[in-house]
Amino acid sequence: MSLPSVAYLSMEIALDQSLSTYSGGLGFLAGSHMLSAGYLQMPMVGVTMLWSYGYYDQRIGENGQVEVSYIRKYYDYLTDLGVQVEVDTFGEKVKVKAYRVEPELFGACPVYLLTTDIDGNSDWARSISHRLYDGNEKIRIAQETVLGIGGIKILQAMRYKFDVIHMNEGHALPAAFELLRQFKGDIEEVKKRTVFTTHTPVAAGNEVHWIDTLMEGGFFAGCSREKAIELGGENFSLTVAALRMSRIANAVSQLHGLVSNKMWDWVEGRCPIRAITNAVNLHYWQDKRMNGDKSFEELLAAKREMKQELFKFIANKAGKRFDPDVLTITWARRFADYKRAWLILMDKDRITKLLDNNKLQLIFAGKFHPDDVMGKEMFNKLLNRSHSMKNMVVLPGYELQLSGMLKRGSDIWLNTPLRPFEASGTSGMSANANGALHLSTYDGWTVEGTFNGVNGYTIEYEGLDDEIPWEERHWKDHEYMMNVIEKEIIPTYYHNKEEWARMMRQAIRTAEAYFNSDRMVIEYYNRIYRSIAHDTEGAGKDKADVNLTRPTFDAWTFANIK
Image (cartoon, rainbow, N blue to C red):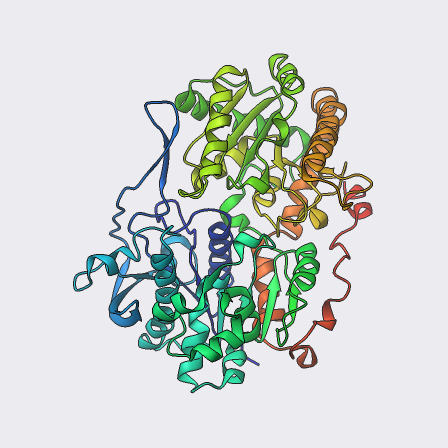
């Protein structure tokens, strides 16, 4: 049986920093998916938007506070396909033009980029593809309508015969409604061709809009109001409708699979939700100086060299000089409150003592949504504190290049989400691949891939899932984390270099063995895109995934790899 042809629709895809079509983790993941599909020569294309201004540019202003700026992007290396389609949204017939990122540019499978910022469209219509995740609700709905409906129409205009539409998050849901229109309301025909990935158990990440606003936006491709309500409710949930319109769905870690099945158990007629753990493209992320076959001495020398490279950048960017022989901890990811960038700083006296005594250095980086007042305030508070604290820096402009530099130059990659709100997370995987040890709350992929004392450190304790107030949970997590840093990490780093190097090697080997997106793409083909076990493809719970708590590897295995 030949492999099915897949069209992967995602609001953001990060292929290279020179192409501003991403905001953060979701885009990084999608980029790894495309890169591995290209490397493995899988029959797949990506479909995303060509954002005229990207997400936004983050910088520090004259007043010492973080600023959001928008700079128009220009590209001369995209292939103009000479194809246009029309999408009806909010009373306008909007022209959608397509470009292609050729495989030889970045090594990915072909990726189609859609834009409305072209002659012949109104100013409003042109603005649809200006900014990723625009805060204006109508523009946001129009963006999703263009991605889904425009994406299907462009693929068909290009005569790309897809067997499967992969909706990466609910943003691409209008694609399923366009198929429903083309199949004259036969939802079973839609389900045969549609799969869906859900990425978050956080309520804000599961998009909801009032049904009539979506109707005005053309989101449902002519589907009746009654049918749309039947699929997603009057206060329409994109995730609920996607689960009802897909043949199968997947969560993005084994723990997230458990959480998602429980979270959406009430949805009648939903498809099975399997668990496929996220991964990163090691061909892109792993420095050639780092691999699991290097000797301890080579790993330590390479890490020190990479720290020097990072610290030169920090000195130029922030005017702070870091020491390559001092333990360096990095927190770098999206500035969302549940990710708790501030957790390590809760006891100011305790962390200040470690910083002042040159026991550790702290680096923070990450973007908040431009309309997220709380995220911006959190960034500025950390930034202001860093000016008066020794060995602490906050770096603006967290994108692919800085992300790679931080992962190469860090000793510890800190991950502090409030369990169980981190569906997976991937940054720690690429950090592991570069010999940075993971220190993480027991959430997302950490449950499967970070083995305490073997290849990293976990923040877990008795009563981890007890019902207690969040403030109490924050302090418990903080206390345990600081104990691990002071009693385990610092002594090992400074006084047992052989053990530190051994853990570095095991972290690298873990990433190479399983958290490589080549594995992930193959798993998607075997478990999501093509039907191997036909008896598990119907609606309801996926009986094939009952034992979701089983880790992929066990601690004994890693402890005995030398």
